[in-house]
Length: 146
Ligand SMILES: NC(=O)c1ccc[n+]([C@@H]2O[C@H](COP(=O)([O-])OP(=O)(O)OC[C@H]3O[C@@H](n4cnc5c(N)ncnc54)[C@H](OP(=O)(O)O)[C@@H]3O)[C@@H](O)[C@H]2O)c1
Image 1 (tube, protein in one colour):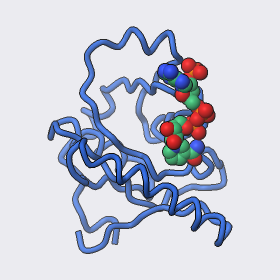
Image 2 (cartoon, rainbow, N blue to C red; image 1 turned 180 degrees about the vertical axis):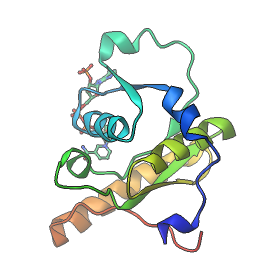
Image 3 (tube, rainbow, N blue to C red; image 1 turned 120 degrees about the vertical axis):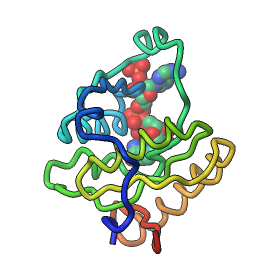
């Protein structure tokens, strides 16, 4: 089902040419994301607070809110079976992040609105934590019919 929606049109070569900086890359979530993106073929630089201050021009995108670090970091997990909601005001930037998410086996990037809608996406994490507690899982989201 996840493969039904074509991911934004970025050639693998274009994605290979990117160097991805992960701010917060020393934390659980950042480390997990950096690991998966590197495994998918991207060059990744992990930033800590001082390095982050050097970044002056960025296009802001919200994504990966619901992706559990445990799944990203677990070497036993080959496919990270979930959709990633990508939010932002810049189409080029959201397309790029969708394409990057879709490079991680099992994952798919799905556009989910403008940056002002990030709040409710972040808030849904609390519900997923409840799902995880009840079902002893690392639950993710799937968007149907796209
Ligand atoms: N853990 C999960 O499963 C999970 C799942 C979904 C979403 N998230 C979200 O991902 C984010 C990080 O979570 P985490 O679990 O990775 O936390 P964490 O392990 O505590 O890591 C926090 C990271 O943020 C950086 N950081 C902290 N304060 C900063 C500041 N003032 N300026 C710049 N960087 C700062 C730290 O970098 P330095 O100390 O090296 O500077 C570190 O790399 C949170 O917003 C969380 O809600 C986490």
